[in-house]
Length: 418
Ligand code: AMP
Image 1: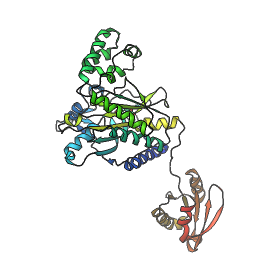
Image 2 (image 1 turned 90 degrees about the horizontal axis):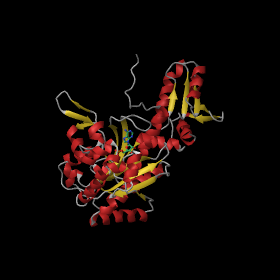
Image 3 (image 1 turned 60 degrees about the vertical axis):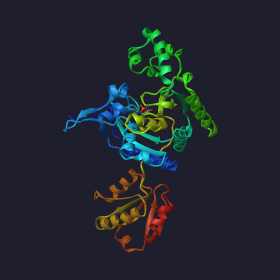
Image 4 (image 1 turned 180 degrees about the horizontal axis):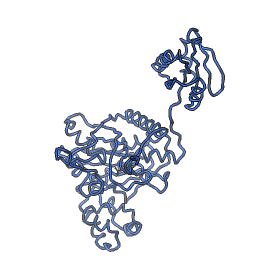
């Protein structure tokens, strides 16, 4: 029996790999322009980091982590998300004493034991940012401005930005009490999950996907109505800031997000390109997480989006992404010119051109066929005559036109005519 890739994982190659490379390069490029610096993290961490950082009551920690004992008997977990690891690194390397804000971007593969479906995998890639050290609503504007700029750079402009404020340690207890009162009164009408959430994480009932729960929760108290003055002013400034730089948004009073660490502003970019409305990106402020993980009080904000879901979204909307690179030139060689063909290819490749030549010892005809199959843009026949001459014939494969070019000028010609 042939061995297959585990359920929920996928091989990425060909056009998809080229798309993904482009999306990542563009992400790094735009993030750099906004002053975010790249961070790379270990693929596995101590399990405790996610238990404390993501929260014991979350679906991730309860049901979805890949956790195992290593040969030294330590409990290890494959990274399910990026934020906890970034904060761990921030503290481990003494970054709280560096000038604020610290701005990180990342492209990380994460692991969650979820039921696989379109756009949902057990190993997937998240692009994200974490901005640590700013309490100001301007930090919200900065990260949202970056996202909107990145989406525009890759051609995505059909989405909705939903925002909400879920308050802070000061105002949330009052809200929780009100919500629990409401949930208790409607206990029997809620799904089993929400009945359990009543005890563990009542806030999460608000974004339950069960239709019956959604109907019941229409009338539930909303976090934004219970904000303390500080949180209310903060939320108002976030909305004013978004207006000022022309970012459209919708307030969604039921938006809470699935992870425990969020405080104040939470947001999602929602789109229906892949089918039903779904979140292509989620994030928010997490002013307590650094402290929870043993650091000094440090306000912070971040987001993450799934690369696979983003790519499907662009594909569904017919947005073009660069595919597999076509060779600028195919050098067709013979038995006595294979070495020189490789030499010429090496010279042109060093100049930045994409060049292919025969490494299969194929016949002339078979090489022609191969050059067509890989969509080479130009063809050069390098025989013993051409080897001696100062000029060569270069054929444009699209037009069929042949041009005589001095060998020394080959790279300039190809660079100008690709
Ligand atoms: P979360 O970290 O759960 O807030 O998710 C943030 C974003 O990551 C989502 O909006 C998705 O785009 C993406 N994402 C989360 N889980 C998965 C998964 N299992 N497979 C693919 N993408 C995912």
